[in-house]
Length: 332
Image (cartoon, rainbow, N blue to C red; front, side, top):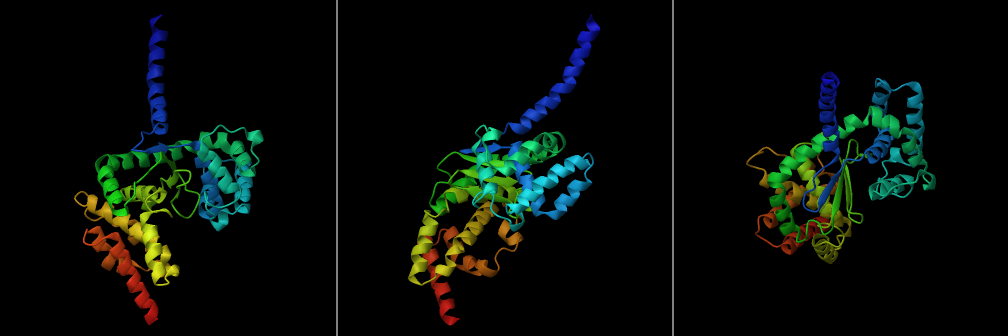
């Protein structure tokens, strides 16, 4: 009578660690007003978008063991529909119009969905592929997302509060005014590695791009959060830029708010983590963003750094940038 009982205990000891691991990777603790999610259906949606956008990723899928012809056919049907709805043109998964953005909004809402009542062809593909995805791919994708989350949380626990406090001081705005969800995804479903909707208080951020990993994950986490309130259209920063630039007829340069945004978050993170990571290079510099329409780095080095150092006000810094751009405009 004892042997069956012991055998049951042994089996349970083997099963429970697996169950605990699965549970842990889906239950993510929040930070301040931020909650984190790691949801399979949203991941599948953006993975299909990425397969439609990136032919190399699709070629890799076809070589994967365990994907047979009938299953690959289901992927091909879905990919063709995603292409039809704009994936190859890299349409925004939140702010575009049409089925891609509609489906993204539906999945982000978190409300139960009756598949028969949803008039969205792309959603039908999710239903068709969800079992296959959950069985053969979700385990890898889920664990990638979870490892990214754990790495970020370690850094947030040490540096999150000082970074948030400094950004609030510099932008003159609350970091967040509403509860905000950060959805971690294996592939972001677009060329950019993340996107944020201030209206719905949702961020989508990937766990696999190298420039969103390690310390850069910390920077880009705060970059996305500041999109929600700190630098939106009604923010102090954009208001001052609009006012000062209008004085000099610099409408074409008002997009400078975004380079300033990148510059500020990157510099704050660099300074806060400098003792532990003295060689940190911010995202915009690493990716060569300060070129073309964004060729403002020399101006920011000269006129924005004094603001970050507390030597001038935001108004003075923006006024100095506007005056310099006006002078360049007259000389050209």
